[in-house]
Image: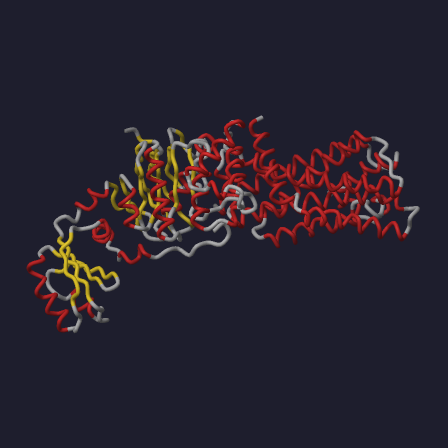
Length: 324
Length: 245
C-alpha cells in the first residue's frame, strides 16, 4: 500500500522547549495508525502540524500527496480532524451543525442535507438531530464531532484522543464507529494515551515520548520486543506500602507493575524468582488470591521500551471547558 | 466565487447563531432610540441637523460591537479552530465575519432610519448615495471591529478596545459639532477617523449640500479605510494564528 501521509523530520519548538523532535514516519492508505504516548508527549502538536493548525519549526508533512505548508487549503479538502475538545457550535442543532460544515467544505447543495441525515443515522444521532449541540451529552457531542469531520468524505480522519473523558459504553461505541470507518476505506490517524485502545484499534503504532518516536510497528511486533520476558501476575488481598522496593531487591526481577491489588513481575525466569516472591509476600502478611503466568502485553512492551511507569498512561488531561 | 459563497455561509451562520437573537436586536436599537429622543426633547426643531450623525453612530456601534465580540468568543470556545481547519483562505474567514456584522449593522440602521422618517419628517434626497455611504461605512466599521478582535484574547478586552475607538468618535467626527468648528489639532484627528466621512456623506444625502467634503471623496476615503482595515486585520490575524495555534 502507498503512503498517504509522509512526515519527514517534523519539529516544533516553543522557545528552548522542543515539543516534537525531528520525527519521521509514513502512514499507509486504509490503515489505522496510532500515536501512543503519555500526556505532553507531543501527540497533539504533531497532529496540529499535520493538519495545518500549527506551523512546524522545521520538517515537512505530505498529506495525500501535498505539502501541508505549501497547499493548506487543498490538503484540508482531503482530511477531517476531530480535536480533543468537541468544538461544534453550541447554538446550532446537530443537523444545522452538519449542514454548516457541509457548506464550508463545498459539498454540493443537493447532497448536503442527505449526507447530514445519513451521518446522523450512522452515528446513532437521528433522535437528536433537532437538539442544540450544547444540550447533547459528552458522548453524543463526540459522535457528532466525528460525524462532522466526515461530512465531505475525507480520505484521512485525524482523531485526537477520541475517547478521553467518555464513559465506558460511549467509548466502546466510539471505537466500533472508528473500526466501521476503517472498513469503508478511510485512513485513520489517532492519538491516544490508552494502551488497550491503541492495541485494539491500530494496525500500526508509533510510541512517542518527550517529542521523540521510540518505535513504529504493529502491536504484535512491538510486543515481540519483550517476548524473551516472562510475566508473573499475583493478585493480593492488599498491597502493603513498602512492598515494591523489597520485591525489586529480589534477584531476577526486571520490572514490577502494580495495578490496584495486582502485581505484575517481569522476569527472564519465573521458576527462579517465584519462590522468593511468594516467601516475601508471606513475610509481609499479604494473602495471595490469584497467581497467573501471562504473555507480555503491549503495556509491558511500552514500559520496557520507554522506561516509563504505565500509570502515567492512565492519567487523563483535565477536560477543557467550552464545547465539552 | 467559491470563497464568496463560503463567506456568505459563515455570515448566515453568525446571523442565525448570534445576531438575530431578540436581546441583541433590541440592544442594537436601544442606543440610537435613546439618543434620538434625548435630542428630540431638547430641541425638536434642530434635531434634523444631528440626524446624519445619529445614523452614523447607530451604524458604528451596531457593526463594530458584534464583529469585535464574535471572533474573540469563537476563539475562546475553540470554534474558530473549526474555521481554520476548513478549506478556507484566512481572508475568506475575515470577509465572512465582517459580512455578518455589516448586515447586522445595516439592518439596525435601516430600521432606525425608517422609524425616523415619519417622526421627524426625514427625507432621503439621494437614495443611491445614501445606500452606498451606509454600505461602505458598515463594512469599514465591521472591519474596525474585526481588527480589534484579532488583536486581543478576551471578550472583555474586545469590548474595552471597541469603546476606546468608538467613544472619541462620538465627539470628534462631526456628529454633534461640525469638524470645521473644532479647535486645532482636533480636526486633524477627526480626518483620521472613518465616522467623519460617514457623517459628512450622510449630510449630503439627508440635508442637501450640508457636507463639507465632496461626496465622491467621502466614498473614496471610506473605500480606502476598508482596504486599510482589511489589510491590517489580515496581517495581525495571520501573525496571531502563528503565535497562538
